[in-house]
Image (tube, rainbow, N blue to C red; front, side, top):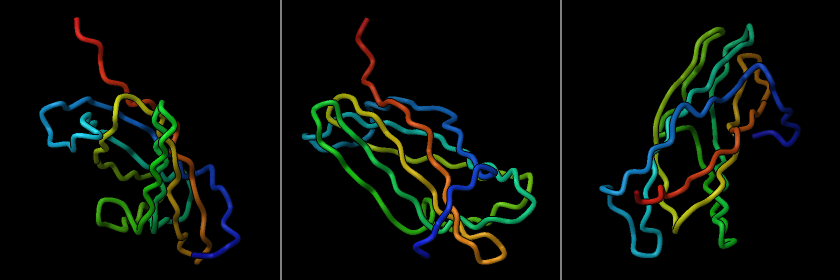
Length: 128
């Protein structure tokens, strides 16, 4: 990845849904699993390949987890102009947290760019 990566506003991220899934396995110290659904849209005129991602999860108690790695859910999708890539994944937390981050892409011309993941909240629903 290059050091001079610029923010690219024609690649945008939408958090489609966040669902609390208490029936999924989770460790005792982070017992609350959430599934989130994400779409990455390419509004530019050039294909973009998603090469990496960085997620930052800030729990209300102050604990911060940073997840970085290649691609998205084991893939490095190329998103053609006017198209999008959608996927879902999950995260486990203690009780509630703010989540944000970025996707890093390589344009067809070799230029590296990034786009921010809009901040969203993971919050265990209150029992009725």
